[in-house]
Image 1: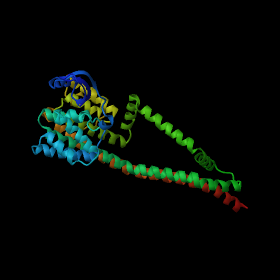
Image 2 (image 1 turned 45 degrees about the vertical axis):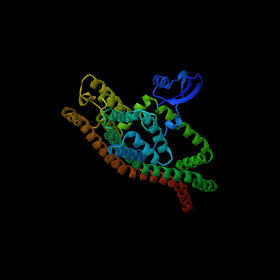
Image 3 (image 1 turned 90 degrees about the horizontal axis):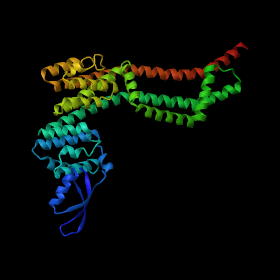
Length: 400
């Protein structure tokens, strides 16, 4: 709730300076008049950005939602439930967040309005679910659905992170090994070859040149890599570049299917959550499209939304050559024709998530031997560069 600095005159003609919170300035003026205060100047205070950006860890937030749901189902009103949770919370972000929300709810602010202050923790689609629960007097059910939704999303993220652990570890180990060989081992062999005045093969000459570059030019290499990363990050924020990147991702073998199913699961999860909370389908589709994480599929959903707005069912509104998995159209058609769209979206969410996990397992099964072969090839090439001059030297000795 916004806070205002007030310069007012009371009934005795004494100037008073106050600070109060109110939904807006008009309501605040009415409140001041009721207290026999004549406002001279009212100024809205800037929001505490540091406080508004507080974010809880996902497990903590899910646990908090479950506790709030249990108290509401037990018949405790929201004001008392939030106050009790704030009192029991450990010092830190959770207590600060609960105290802020409780303070505003105690003054009559709707819960979803108080939650919107924490813009990182309660983005618009989550706050909309809370608002729908309050409007329909189904707040415990809305909070329970929100907790289940966040749990499913967290599981998807954990699956993706676990899949990245092995290739990242192998990449770091390979980089460290190559750096050690180029920086410490190759120079020793280079000195030996130089003392013997051998005619070196091209691969050995290239390896020694790379070693010299790494040893003496590593600050420049790091600066170039940092600059390239910054440029790539800036370019990647361009909608056109992001769209081209997502097109390429969808066409990758195996990994493209993982991206496709993960985006489908995210869309179905967010759209179902909003639809079941009573949010209009058009709004649910817009939010679901924004949260897919893939620009190609988001554009197709927004295009379908325009057709749904003029009366077409969603399953028929999708483009003919859409990027979603093939099972999405039959599932949507079944749900829309039977009036069970929420159940259909849940089925799509669960099935797409399971298929994404299967595809990730397949990708890892293919990636492990590929990474090992790459590592073996790099080490083998470096070893061959060492041994070729030695073989040449031994051959010359035997010929004599």
